[in-house]
Amino acid sequence: MTDLVQQLSQLIAENLQAAPTATVDQLVERLKTDDRIIQINTGNAMAFQTVVEGGTANVGIHLHDFDDEKLNRVLKAFWQSLQPSGVPNNVPHSGVAKFIGREPELERLHTQLQQDSLVAISAVEGMGGVGKTELAIQYTQRYADVYPGGIAWLFAREFNMSAQVVGFAQSQLNLKIPEGLELPDQVAFCWRNWREGEVLLVLDDVVNYSRDVEPYLPPPASNRFKVVMTTRLTFGPPIQSLSLDVLSPEQSLELLTVLIGEARVQPELEIAQSLCAWLEHLPLGIELVGRYLLKRTDLSLATLLFRLQEKAKKRQAIRHDALQRDEATATSTARRGAEAAFELSWEELNTPGQHLGKLLSLFAPAPIPWYLAESVEQKYCENSEGSQEFDVEVFENARARLLDLHLLQLSQQQEKIYRLHSLIREFFRSKLEGEADETSNVTVS
Ligand SMILES: Nc1ncnc2c1ncn2[C@@H]1O[C@H](COP(=O)(O)OP(=O)(O)OP(=O)(O)O)[C@@H](O)[C@H]1O
Ligand SMILES: [Mg+2]
Image 1 (cartoon, rainbow, N blue to C red):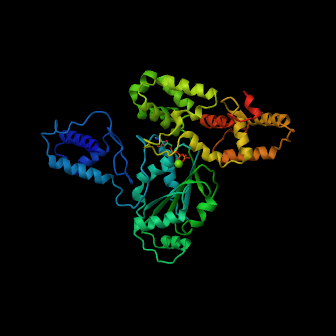
Image 2 (cartoon, rainbow, N blue to C red; image 1 turned 90 degrees about the vertical axis):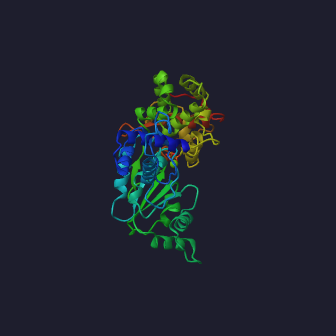
Image 3 (cartoon, helix red, strand yellow; image 1 turned 180 degrees about the vertical axis):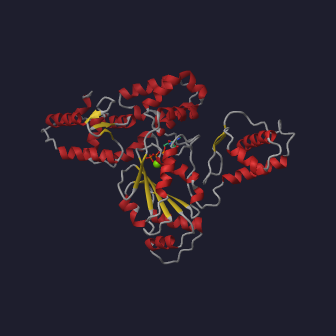
């Protein structure tokens, strides 16, 4: 922290030197656009995460000629300009060193939420690790001022929504709830007596909307409440959806570079690109691998890629340490490694869904025409013990479930071609490993 203050002081000093007659406000504005400041977290964040790119702070060496007092005032004003102007919120800290891309998505989300009719509900949808939670955090930071009524971050997967709403109202809004009310009435009281102004509710990681969310929402007519959900599920109207895809190749390379540094990427640029491609540009994968490499300064990217590919041959790539989250030192937004993240979706699958996932993982890593999947399944049914009957409806329902959970993607609608993300494929393959499953000896290409 002291380091960050020193680095900022250094920057202010340089700006002061360049514009000695500038006012405090002008200097604050200059700082905000200084591109050496590569990322500043506002919102609930109490500290800058990565403030100054390159260069070291030598406060005290170059500062003799400065008006220390003015420097202090600029520092204070700059700091205050980053605070979310008193909006009550409990948004978790973001762990990104730099937030990459997603500009159109942030804007679209804002447009969706600003609709006037009823409670606007938007769902940020996508596979595990694609960056749904991060997008929601960034949104709350960027648009904090739009929600003077507060930003309540609710953990939908783990905890009961109503208790969290009541807890937020008590701790952040100082609302005194009459004694003796049942929980649903407490929630209704909170909605009725909520602080003035537009309010944002973020429901992170919704697994069951009708059970966990819908009964506790603010009354439909209270259109100052805006709701954004992050979810691996697929919703339809009236919930507006914002589907999040993986990063572009350029963006994932940029993310890897931010994590491990140019000096490590440039000498192995092509390998770095292949590594990002192997991870199919999933932010979670890039981040886990980047952090792993950061702790192993002597490991080349080529060696790591080779090791991952070797593990993949044994259907164990998803278990490689580079794809696990190091609990002891983790500072990222992601709360799980890749395998643990996908396991949550796996648990949401019924037996035919799990079976289909494993079956599809046997295909070569390329788009899969559906008729091929069907014919493999038919053969599997014929050859299985006691020969099962192929049930096309069960098979198609299993596909629908995989699609719903973003475990499978439609690649071309007309030709019915589907795609498995490479890490999901590795995950399903790991499920095959060790199973006495006759399909495990088949490789389809
Ligand atoms: N645009 C981005 N720039 C930089 N880092 C990102 C970006 N998007 C995601 N990340 C990082 O990737 C990791 C995974 O993202 P996140 O946790 O938001 O995924 P998720 O879609 O919410 O996954 P889950 O379904 O498991 O909750 C996080 O550590 C996050 O900080
Ligand atoms: Mg999430």
